[in-house]
Amino acid sequence: MLVTELCGVTLKNPVIAASGTFGFGKEYAEIFDISRLGGISSKGLTLEPRFGNTGERVYETASGLINSIGLQNPGVEAFIKEDLPFMQKSGAAVIVNLGGHDLDSYLKGVELLDSQDFDLLELNISCPNVKAGGMAFGMEPATAGHVVKEVRARCHKPLMVKLSPNAPDLVGVALSCQQAGADCLSLVNTFQGMAIDIYRQKPVFDNVFAGFSGPAILPIALRMVYQVCAAVEIPVVGLGGISSAEDAIAFMMAGARAVQVGTATFARPTAMLDIIDGMEDFCKQQKLAHIGDIVGAANPGFR
Ligand code: DOR
Image (tube, rainbow, N blue to C red; front, side, top):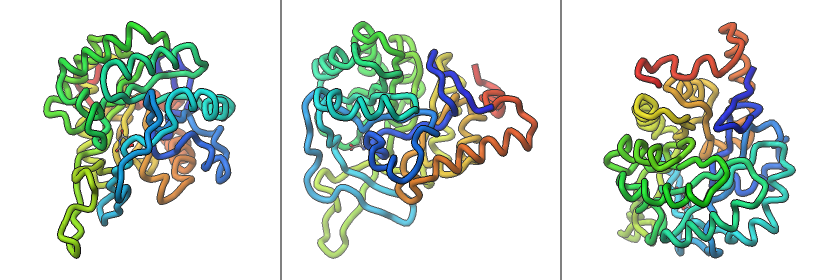
């Protein structure tokens, strides 16, 4: 009922743990059966290890979470040795999220990863928290298309590109990624936000602006997914503030083939299991043979 196909990869359901919120799955495996998930996207990797940003890294607000992690990760080589084997045994589809600070670092990362055993490469061109690279590649169509084209030429896995809601022409970026050979898109990464420490009279984060996520961004992310799904022909994975089965179903009706869940897992580690169960209940109640039948149902422009 929930089995979903994404770029030739079979997911047992359309619910994927979003990059950066689930590490490599190890901590969550102690809390619940992670083999129930459709997929797990790894913490964003870079060619070289990164310690991440200095100062405050996470700030909770009444409307959502702001993070300034700065792509802390062990680097591609250590990931391959120490974390990938665990992900391969997780029972969920394995998605490797890769960022870069310049074109060369993306390409070297892809070259190391391409021969490894995993299901999908998620190219992160939308991290708002690092100065060099990060969001820069995803902000306008030509730059995004260029990096995707170069990566595509070296990548034999299905290629998903993660887009930024901060791009002024998001639909243009999506079309350019499609044209450059992306197999699917994931959207949206976090919005650029900020917080001010009123007692110190200064921004909370050393890098001032940081990534805002959580339920407050859902209606905007949903609108973006709806618009992109009406423009592109490749599958879209929707994310942005999803915390319930109803939220996930709304993204799918906008045209998303699958969804990712991030911030909700911090508050409730088992949120994704409730979403999976809720989707199954919805199918039964609506007499749907397959969850895929709702994809694009609420979007007349869906292609
Ligand atoms: O909000 C985000 N934070 N998005 C990313 O892509 C990476 C992450 C980080 O490490 O800063």
